Length: 525
Image (cartoon, rainbow, N blue to C red):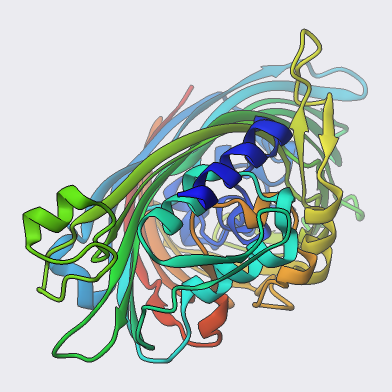
């Protein structure tokens, strides 16, 4: 196995610092907020509170929102979410309980000449729910092995993951030709053409956000606020990729299973204001800016590669077959390789800007409309210093991958609308709608511009998503100090799961439709 030792030498020479695992599309998946989480009132009105304010969850969009609250309040929100790819329900419980929000605001009345009240708040909400399952078959001649061989040929010694490329060689799936000093890699000549691929992936976990809020009411016309935010990422991905090689009756195939986790914490800041431009008019204008979240994350990959290739004499005797041949029996994989690696990296999410307008009609009607813009093309990745100065603000940028991000992703805009009507004093009826644009201006990553992060990742798959529609409705009531609110949310979205660049644009379509019901219990005092 001279090729294996050759790859080993590359690894030792270039060191473990090259063992990166992330890519543009992975970063976009874990940071793209295409849902709506919070109190039932917030959800049922589509989250259109940048100008309306006066809701605990609204502090996550505009920190000034809590300045309109004249009483202290505590609220908790829980519910259930259901929906999955209908073709995969035998592998997946479609319904999950969810705890979406818990927070409180303390309102301190001052009644000064300028400052009327000063509020302090804390709120937790599940910013992104990663739970998802998709899988399916594609039928085309593209092969992952051609992509892997091409990466080896294009990047040569810059590729340092013996665990991945050495495993594919040991399993008889890629060959090396030429000399050690000038190798050429190719898909194994012993393999018949590929005629189809099978892909499966399940993600779970969530992005959990914690906001500490400070807000001030000035003259009952000007409201300003500041948030200090902490976010914790808990992302899990289990996936597999298989190729059908040869004929349907006599397949010579392989498959790889990998498990990927991302853990870490980040910080961000939000600054916002709400203004009533006309003193005797309830019309409100809102504006807010959210800095990137600066994450310090640890990514871990575990994988196992299974092949029908008989790679050693022990397997040859066990299966009564010559060495360096393939076993054609269905379900029999005499050769497998496994491994894992960890890497630390930093992730800088996009800047976000929000504008809102809203108003009320006495105590029986309210409306709000918001616009949000996130600059995803400036999302960035880097690597922390490996010394005592290690922090989220002391990192080295991955210039090549960030260039790929700028060429693949665009800005994302989001519009929100919300209505609330009270036909009777104790009953509020609510409606909401969100449209969230897609962030992808190029769904196919370019291996000619790939960086070490992309070419060293375990898998060759990536995921993109379509624009999202959120339709919400709900109702609520309040009896003295106690309130109860209910909300229903339907998310309409599709995703596209690509298994290998060599088979592009063949993909598995992902049904991202989800239904959610939540209930909020609140108390004012």
